[in-house]
Length: 108
Image 1 (cartoon, rainbow, N blue to C red):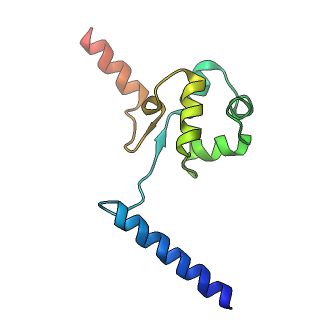
Image 2: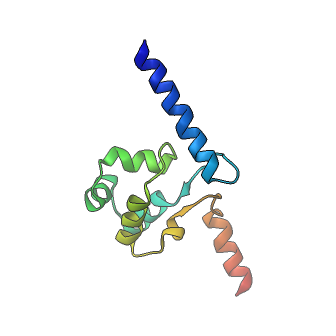
């Protein structure tokens, strides 16, 4: 029973520390284009996982938004595809590919 109390106190302390160092104390979603990048290059989850040193399930969790990557993992994934991190990961939803293509046609 004592260990449960300690765990609860640690959780509260971590949340408090988070709020001290951030301005708005919320957990934001991280959106990504991993599946799109994989499909474009014909890379399987297993191949990408092996290239960046994680379990293939981790790639699935990332693609579904069930897991947020560490900065190191995000940089390894972006490096594997040869693009900047912000081209794959974002705090706001990406524009659908069809809309981006249509906008490109209109500009031409």
